[in-house]
Length: 269
Image 1 (cartoon, rainbow, N blue to C red):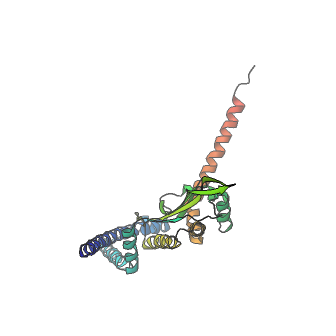
Image 2 (image 1 turned 45 degrees about the horizontal axis):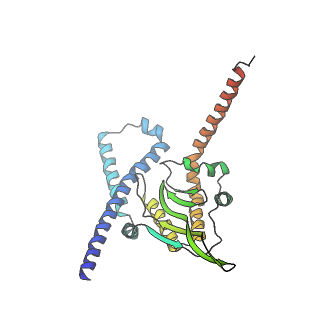
Image 3 (image 1 turned 90 degrees about the vertical axis):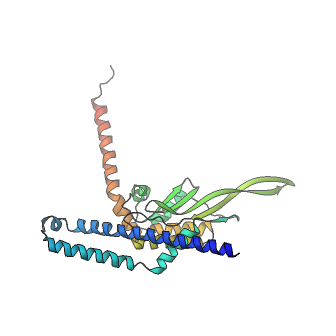
């Protein structure tokens, strides 16, 4: 018993150290993400202003102090929750009871569009979001699986499975299968450019879905809710709208080219 407790303490310590290292890496990317935003806001000023060596040195020192302060401002509770998520790993819950719930891709699309500012074309092209989209996205695969992602990495999944069942019909015993569901949640994956709020949003979603204990309908609704949050939709629109516009323009140009080629092709004699 004592040996087991000692091993548990060692593993927990290792996980906590790993969590702190990952959070430091997260915060090191914070400066680059915020500096890129500042550069986009003031491009002209960055090009024209001349700095003296002493001023550059002072500003460099100020930035280092700010980075140190940002590291110190990471809530202890966030560190603890992240370390716990890494230690616990992937969670799994099953719903084997009979249910009327089904993963319906069309119904989910209609629900997401009705409760948010997304248009059909934006919803149908949501996969165009790239590495610059720090938010939730939703994948629905052939009425079989739902995946809630954050910056392209799975936060939670809901998967349809089949369980065997036996029924008696007219005195005859028959064996078949009925739908059942499996819910998994995953520890947050930290990526370059993320900030502490990204980590906290992933932790919140994972913890909330895990607390639903595998109820498939509740899990599906929670995934849709995170995806359709107002600030998340705003970020998603910013990440995909121009790409959709470009995609539609290329499609239009291709159709025009086909029509022109058809007009110029020689007619059969």
